[in-house]
Image (cartoon, rainbow, N blue to C red; front, side, top):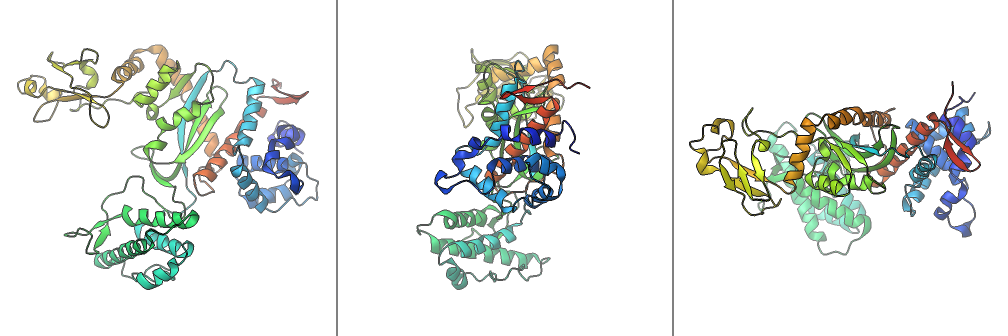
Length: 507
């Protein structure tokens, strides 16, 4: 009844070897006896839950009624399993432990013992958008929700709200009763809500708060300023505000999950949630590292997260990635480490459509000169500015230049700007455009990561079930562990005499 070669059949035979009691021993106090439900059983359920994309209630229901789940977890026919809340407690214990990702690391240790990655030195990097578990809120909803949270979580704040905040009845769970198609009425409401928020913050200033109370006040301070701006002919001191005609960088999109963000994966794809950052061995499809981060912010960009994905690797690798990973600092770091890079460089945009790009200029950073396509040579200025760039100015030479129409539209002439590691980036663009071996390897191996991304988000798993970066990062590691285990089983995973190995599957 249990399909041979399935994850269920494998766990039925090998779950105790995969998750022995000592794997989770540090999560439980030895003086309090054994846990009511063996952690190995809970880990097995978590793996199956992540593999099939189920909620806690759905996973426990499957454990009670699905014979495959019972066999995989070693339960009898009439065994009722356990309450779904135990899965929540188990995840909390994992999160508080010294190794929150131990299920992923356990499967990774199996991968290493099988030797399936031996000699396979390619790593493909990519990211995938994962949608958040909450509704995106507008500015008015967030202001009201943030004030309510302060009233609930800060000692004495509810009395302050009742005494000083009058733009809305914050005990009323409904929306403010105004004419929502009346712009003046809406602006008056926004002005009142912002004034209430600032008044509340002023009364709470200087208080010694910690934990949820400090978090609630900090969230209100962010919400009060991110989506509003002074009204016309106002500097804000007169209490007149309106919804800002722009989107704040790193905007909080919900008070229910303050870490979720707007995500612009491309010019056309716009979502709300988080990004899953992945490192994959493209031939086997195994995840070698994963990380979940907020979907916006320089610290969470693909190029910033990539070193973390590769930190546990040993030896020289061939790194495959798209243009999101083409930052000069990352390229320099990986090059210095000796890796071979197949990172697609972004296309240069000419100042004039069809005109000259930066690569059409002869740039000699060592000599400190730049020569334009017309043959004019000018010096590079000293390094300066936020990005430590250097500039070469052709202004006086552009006036009578016959190539001006193909070079610049600026009235003052062309200014060429280069940043650190320019030579490295230029060499990468040249190699990607002219090296057939580079192009063949990139076309062959880079698309394989899309297969892993498709496995990751299948069965509705693009939509997250949890709130916050930490909880969703745990889920991502469990999902990757489950997918890796399934892939190993399909490759013939066996356990004999205490050794994990791959046995070729014969027809």
